[in-house]
Structure formats: C-alpha cells, structure tokens
Image (cartoon, rainbow, N blue to C red; front, side, top):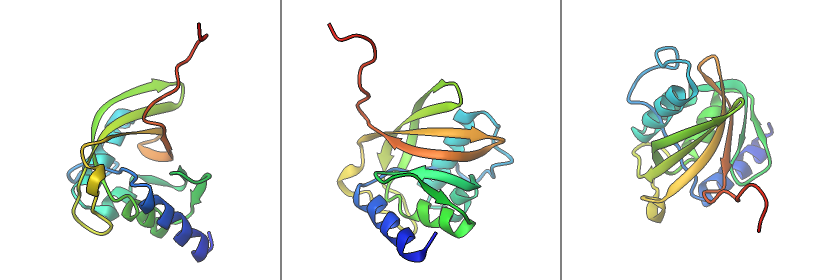
Length: 154
C-alpha cells in the first residue's frame, strides 16, 4: 500500500470515530481460537492502549473496511497503523455468527496510548463484522450500528 493511500485511510478512520479493542495482555496464541474469544482479546488489548499487541491479532495480509472501501493490510506496520487510527477502545457486549462471519457489538470507551481519544463517541455502541481463522483476524469490517430489517416489509 502506498504511503499516501495509507495516510488517507488512517485519516478517514480517525475522522469517523471508529472503535477498537483487545485483551489485557494475552497473545493471539493464548486466546482461544473461537471468534468471540479472539475478538474479546483484541478489544481488551486495544482498550488498554497496547496497540502493538492489538496489531498482532491481525493476519498479514488482512482486509479492513472502516468507512472506506476494503483496504488490505500487508505488513505489521500497517496493522499497527490501523489500530492506532481507532481512537476509541471498546468493551465487547455480544457477538452473533452466520457462517464464517462474526458480528460484534461494542460499547465505545476512551483508551490510553497512541491515537486514543474517543471524545463524544464514548458510551456509544458500534458493530464490526469479523472473519477469524486460526486465532487471527482476517477481516475487520465496520457495519451499521442499526442493521436493516430482514424479511418482507408489510
């Protein structure tokens, strides 16, 4: 990814007040391989301000989408940059799964460390859909906090 493209992406991530999070110190290997446990570990780690460790939960390469089109993170440096660009920490509230996708609902929080500063977003909820494989985040996609209804409209 060209540096200018990464900087534009990171600026957009910061400007829309995205969420992030992770676990209080476990490595991806120590977290259970189940998607909810990997998501909880990642969100607890980022919420604690440990952006390098939070970045280690991402597969290289992985795909992220946060108010932009899909962006491929091709290095640990880019994964770290993505995590730094998430100004909020997040507390995992619940997950639901459909096939390979797991959607997580988070309560946004402030977080210490580089890029932290949730501002007025703290206390709000946010949803992200993940694809997790072998204990790593392969896809991270911010989705609407107000999902559209499914089924026929009467």
